[in-house]
Length: 327
Ligand code: AMP
Ligand code: MG
Image (cartoon, rainbow, N blue to C red; front, top):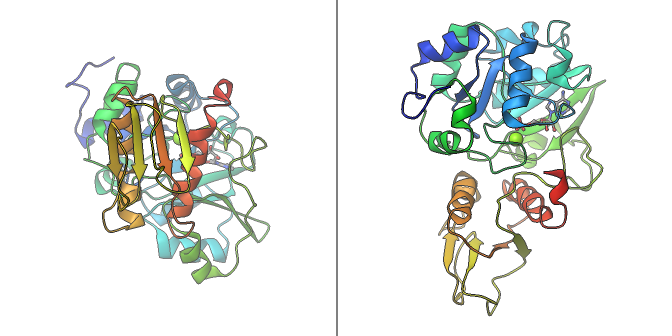
């Protein structure tokens, strides 16, 4: 197992590790992924082991180009083609019927597989060089904050993986939107980096469940507690007028209120831009987690565009307080 800084490798080395069944952290526009050969059940099992991820939580498969789709899915209906042509490469995962060669471990025994083309040139080059589809969940221990820099990966998983490809900070900064397309029904399984508004503008109404953060997950792995900082987090509608201790942190879109004595304030976008806020979100939480705060007060985001995905992540982070057992 490599030690820093030798863990950081070239695209050729990264591809060689993948071909040999190794685990490589790969940059994407959403968050860093922990990649392994999706056709090799042993490599896939190593991903679950490194993350301590339960086997009921399926993995997303990454491909570099749309003409690889027949290597992964057995059906590619017109509506999925339309979505892929519009949003790939990008933060949209399509869940479609899988081909036999994708091991059951990847999909947690489901007949469908999640697939996407990440919008990161280095990683797409690695996938082409490795010449295998790559299963890659976020490169963090299960239930913990997602990594948006190579250093986050190194700190959280560095001693459990073979290599890290450093592609700089992630541009989008939150995970992909997940749409399942089965039997002509399109269902939103997880809000993410492509907004529901953009999707519905292209294909019309999408079926979506009322709550995406409940104890009875609509998709496997959609646990109420997820993406959680170690520090307790509480969601509020607006900045409180007073604070209870001098070790409180504030996470806010725009800091336009006169905030009381917070030990740390993370303003995600001074102009209130939700895209910029998404890109800064996990980095801000990582900084707050490292600051030894007693509590993080997070102000709810507007419930539109990427705000929906950000509120979803906040709900899961808050839930950790009452349900540590599911992390
Ligand atoms: P991530 O942890 O960002 O890699 O996202 C993985 C999540 O995608 C899982 O927790 C599931 O909620 C969802 N997912 C992946 N594959 C499938 C699938 N075959 N069917 C339904 N949901 C899936
Ligand atoms: Mg994850």
